[in-house]
Image (cartoon, rainbow, N blue to C red):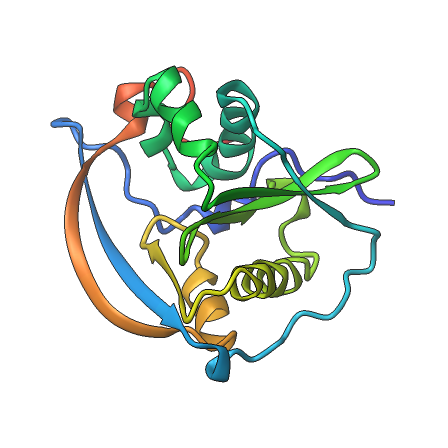
Length: 199
């Protein structure tokens, strides 16, 4: 029996550039959208039991633990910039939902819906590569459309998993635009958290 990985394999983050001295980080962001007619269900049930439960009224601390466990390898940091009250208000808006996937109590991943947007979606490192991603994406799309959305939107960028864009396109999302942005590098802002090189 193999031991689950606690961090992504080095080749999964090899595409991320090293930190720059000026603290900047250039990324290309791809914006996508999906209509119900374009949705291609791809995910087969995973080989392990995965339960998905909506988190009712998630606290900021609970949410940031999810966000960190899933997003740290991909340098997610935007939600860290929110104040406690601001993040709590966002999480508890009527059109906002957080759905958490677990296997035997272990965090598998989560998806976050905000209006018509799949705001965040991902797996923890130890469950990457086990054919759970497409199945969980189907569940996110299914829930998003069930809420009455005429379309769903999301974005991915060049720091994310190397196959993220391909996975979204295979599910039926189409690219609507791309933009290049200069972000703050979390590896410079919080070097004790976003260690470089990754281990």
